[in-house]
Image (cartoon, rainbow, N blue to C red; front, side):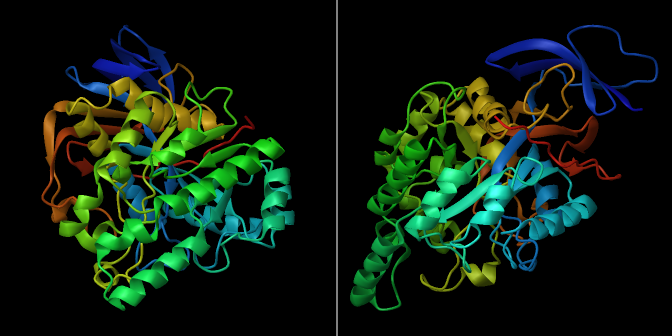
Length: 445
């Protein structure tokens, strides 16, 4: 059994920053505090670097099965390791879609064979798979993903009766993509009449508008309140939607909210230089919306920070407005984005850890992860606040091979990633060896 001793760390955990060592035996944390290293232990001196729980990203699209020209569970999980992400929850809009337990089992088999970080999967909702949703429990999936807005295949859930049934019957947390499709279609038609097919990217936040987001998210909140369902609204983008959520700690909340790193970073002015590379749904919106989202992270109206990591090839992204797919690769750089925003004075380190590690574990009932606690799995990331990271194409691990951050220098660096007690990334390079990833275990909250 491997024994690892991390010494001279500044731990960031449960609202505090304090000096401590961490002793790891096997895949678990044995001791947090001072004490000698056991004989034969591997000792890593962190020299005052900050040690965080590994990031838990509750929203990624690894595209497998069926869309593996864009990404795979193997490639994207290796990118995650390099970014300090030690666990992720993967979305169901694959080919075929993950809308029954047989499809879940097939994805789990791929993950066992190829994944570099701990993993869990959502069961996707459709207008017709209510019986599958009723049967699904924590042993099957992390949650139920409901696309209450345009999606691929048959995964748009727009039948009022189906939505009522899902919110009344789901045993798992319901995670929603909220955009009102009929209004989006109207907006598209209006812009087509003006520009034809040559609609500029600057129109994206007007087509997938704040009103389209609010109509859908307010409907989801109403359904959740009427049925006492556990609702998690993904990737909020507007100031107005924030009125739907309560301030305060996540414990006791049945309706929670998430923001994604790119909506905290970019605003509509970024379309001029990045164009379709930052086309995503819901759209990146105004600087005022971004400021409101940042404030909502600080005042605990927003509970979780994630990525919605969604790779596409550059060839696909080079198409015109209506043909270019939505989504961008993020999981290798999400923690770096947050560390840079810490350097800007926007977020404290404990707040980042709360939103990106503690709260995803609490929300989804992830067993023994998301905290630096004795007896918990040793999923950890050491960061160097004095370091800098320049995003270079040669260092990208995404299968799609590009990032909207190429040429950007972030303030901060990921120095070490530990997964289930084993160092898997250090000083700019993944560490070769057997995969240490595990299936996440979920407990009803």
